[in-house]
Length: 141
Image (cartoon, rainbow, N blue to C red; front, side, top):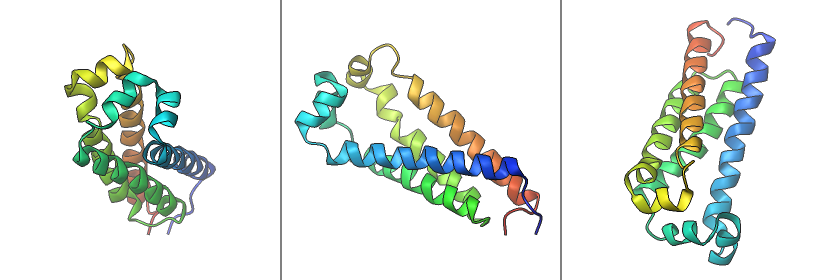
């Protein structure tokens, strides 16, 4: 097995922090009362909370928890990191479908509704690429 360089460890920690942040946001989103949710995101977003589909919520959970597990596996140098990052990315894309197809979400989020999904998908693509590259280079076993 090939020894990873410093960039591998730096990016691994960045991926871990990013995905842990996603998990924290997921927990906050799911555990917050309606009043807390409205305080954090506004009344317009609160109105969309009950119409967010269950399948999108499941995809959101797969995205964040799969990404966290993938980042941990990457730091442990396990080959399962790459497919977990793929599953996380797919979950993220699916979870964003209502944001782009339902006008209520667009209206509640304002003109920048597309920014976070783009950031998440781009970083997810990079995580997939990076983990596959590490596996191909013999860094992951």
